[in-house]
Amino acid sequence: MDKELIKRLAANPNFIAGIYNYCDRWCERCPFTSRCLNFALGEEQFADPEAHDINNEAFWQKLTETLQVTLDMLKEIVEQEGVDLDSLDVEEAAEQERLNEEIAANQECAIAAAIYGDMVDDWFDSAQGLFEEKENELDLKVRLAIPNTNPFEEAAGLKDSLEIIRWYQHLIFAKILRAIEGKLEERAGILDELPKDSDGSAKVTLIAIDRSMAAWVAMRNHFPEREDTILDLLVHLDRLRRKIEETFPDARAFVRPGFDTTS
Image 1 (tube, rainbow, N blue to C red):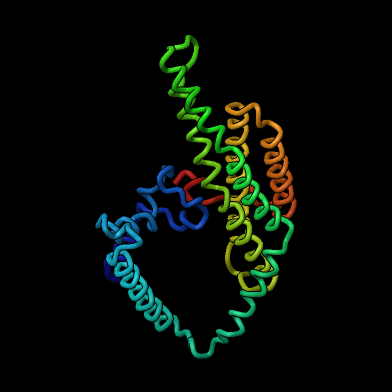
Image 2: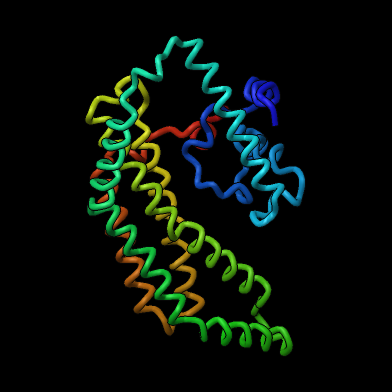
C-alpha cells in the first residue's frame, strides 16, 4: 500500500468522516463498512488471503509496509504544519499518558468493567456441560419434530447471544478506559479545541452494555436453571451502566458520525 492510494481513498466523499472512531469494531455486523475508510484500508491491505494469517510472513510484511507509509505521511503533515517535533517533550507526554492510564484503570467504572470480564469467563467455565445438554436437547427436537418448536431458530438465537456476549466482554473495559482517559485529558485542557471524545467512547460502552444485557436476558431463557448466576451478571452490568451514565451524563446524547446521523 502506498501513500497515493491512501490519499485517494481518504478523498472519497462516500466515506463518513470519523465513523471508525466510535464503533465497536465488529465489522462483520456493521451496516456501514462500505462507507468506512478504516474498513477499506484493511480490505486493501489484506486482500491477499495469506495476509490474514498472523503466523504468515505476508501479514507482518504488510504491517511493516503500512507502518512505513504512516510514518512518511506523518512527516509530510508535520512539515506542512510547521511543527517542530524536536521541541516536543516526548518523555513528559509519555509519562502523563502513563499516569492517566493508571488513574483511569483505578476508577470505579473501569474496575467494574474488568470484574465483568472475569465474571463472564467464570460463568462460561462453569457452564460447559450446559451447552452439551442444550445441543442434545435441540438434536432431539429435530429428530422428533416436536410440534410448536423451532430448534433451528432456537440454536441460531443462542449462537447470536453467545457471540454478542463474547464480543463485548472485554471491549466494555477497553472503551470505558478510553473514555476516562479522554476525560482526564479534557480536564487538563489538552483537547479543548476538539469534540468530547470521552462522551463518544462512553456512548459506545453504554451500547455494548445494552446489547450484552439483552443477550444475557436471552441466555436466561435458554438456561433457566442458571437464572441466579445470570441475574448476578445483569445486576452488575446495570450498576455499571448507571455509574457510566452518572460519570458521563452527556454520553447518550453524543452524535456518532454515520451511526446517529442521516449522512
